[in-house]
Image (cartoon, rainbow, N blue to C red; front, side, top):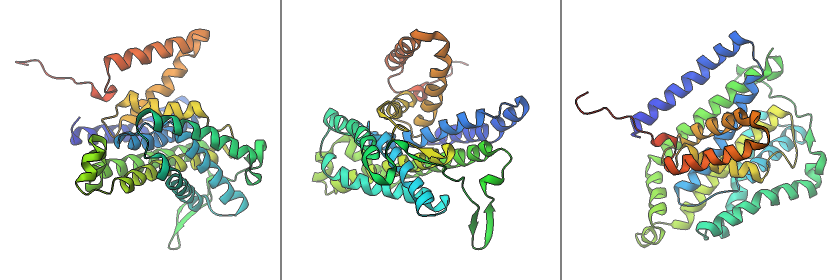
Length: 324
């Protein structure tokens, strides 16, 4: 898909989420759908971070760890330190980025399945740490997280407190969608920049890139830090919506789903994780009526899609016939 086609896809997707979906929900009075779509947007943000690690040639199955760390960091900043959510949210992402730098320096030397196996363990390590650390309140988690307060800039009130909204889920919905749009716009700009071309060089051949003078370790850590930052931001917003965070809020299964979202949408496309998350999330719910066969059908469909569309859903081409 060409850059202009990807931009068009993003514009249509944003229009549907910001205009068509709210109108449809208002008409049908299914207000609970706001929460569902907010979850999809947050999962897409975290999946976007996973996609970036794929972009440098690494298989990341540990994004759930950073989503959990981000959720706890934001909750601690808001509940125990008294910070505003609007400050705690980016700070949670920064905390995750710093943690990822400390972890990434040694593990990013690994490649292929070895790196994937190490990242797979990270989510469970994060869960056990949340159970053991006093600041996270163990299995009880952190509850009664207040909703985001007013957002001001230079004395101007840009957003009122979320507690003042008649439909708080709608307010969170718009927050999640806007954050998702900003996330993927930033990713699109990044991969089409000089740094993005350097990341692509790592994916092609790290040894060759190193021989040409590129600082390969620094580039790997930078990409992993950005990936973890997005996971932390997604986790922070999730904790605000749920008004609580527990060690089980993000599990190994979530980390695997983040990876599957990228595969399904298309690893070669920036906006692949968005489409993959949407299809995977609602596809699983649609199969709920299958009962005990839900997982079997789901797995079979995923295998077929991987065989028929190895480059993801966005790799579909609709070409005109000759003479048309």
